[in-house]
Amino acid sequence: MVAPPYDSLSAAGRRRYAAEHPRNFLNALRAHDDYPPDDRPELSELLAANTEYLHARVREAAFVPHPAPCLLLYRLQENGHTQTGVVAEMPLAEYDEGRLKRHEHTHRAKEEALLQYAEVVGARSSPVCVTYPGRAEIDACIVDLERAEPAIDHRFEDDGVRHTLWCVDDPDDQRRLIALFDDVPCTYLTDGHHRSAALARYAAYAAGPQEDLLVALFPHHQLRILPYNRCVRDRNGYSTKTLLKALGESFAVTPLDDGLPVEQAAPRRRREFAMLLHGHWYRLTLREEPAADVDPVHALDVAILQQRVLGPLFGIEDPRHDPRLSYIPGNRGLDGLLAACGEGDRIAFAVHPTSVEEVMAVADAGEVMPPKSTWFDPKVRSGFLLLLR
Image (tube, rainbow, N blue to C red; front, top):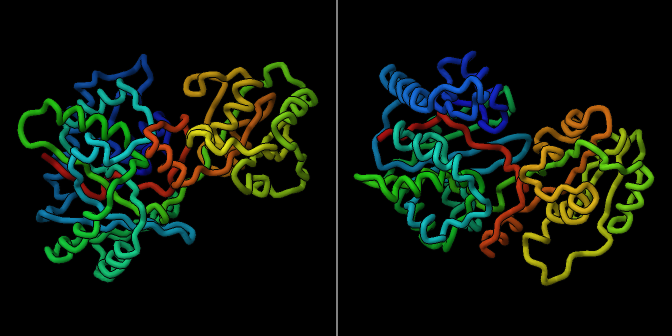
């Protein structure tokens, strides 16, 4: 039942996976964008199929009813990394009044599609991921509650991530955990900006009881952000010599040993980048730190790369839509960047991961991140739990 991470698959990959696994929850998440424009079913047809799939799984008891109220603990483990969140419902007022802070723009068309999903299908299974300034007393309470027998404990072979969930049913335990979160002044969206915006719009006009946001709350110090690397499709007329000279105005450029293991070419710290040019790696180190009073967006490494390289040297002024620029998530490693660049004149840039503190600083300032600034990993999955109206 449990779906693979949605963003880890292309649209074609999602269609293929859903077809090959008819009982998988991806069959409840069919969307217009998963189909090519010339072969797109009507949205009403897709939503009806999503609804029927869910109710068929409920009728056959694929989901086990659980009494409310309930909180869940959700732990993800991978290669020595562990993060544990609390799955709960959060009042939409937290979002509407700005206490749940955002750092991304949303697209109206995507909001609209998710709004119609909420209106027609009326199901939630993918918690919006939220972080909060970590607190030792919350960590201690979660560790105490984790001593109970988990409801689900499963490691997936496709990515090696182990998912463990506990039901917190005891009213005293629920009150204790909720009371600790009462002292958290604000939280931050990390993944799920469009779902949150869509549900807020839906709640603004829907009749009847208002839905809350289904969230997974993780402490900031447990989150892991991987880089979102860049690949440029052409040299914009530069030779190797002239490009290295132009880069040298802002960066110290160091050729790396061709025999170096590829992962050792990765940036080791902030303000350091790696460039793959015609099969050779170079280290680019920013010569001067940004001014102390620069806003938190322009201080980001992805913003520096845009301001100093992609814009002035390659003419990429709109990084959100320029077809010459593609983004490679850091979970694919530098080998994935090599594969994406392939042969020819493509140039790759590896960046140092954005930190959680930088994300929070941007949100606190009421700003938005540049496109593809973060890749939170590992990710929660759809299909473990289901909330139906």
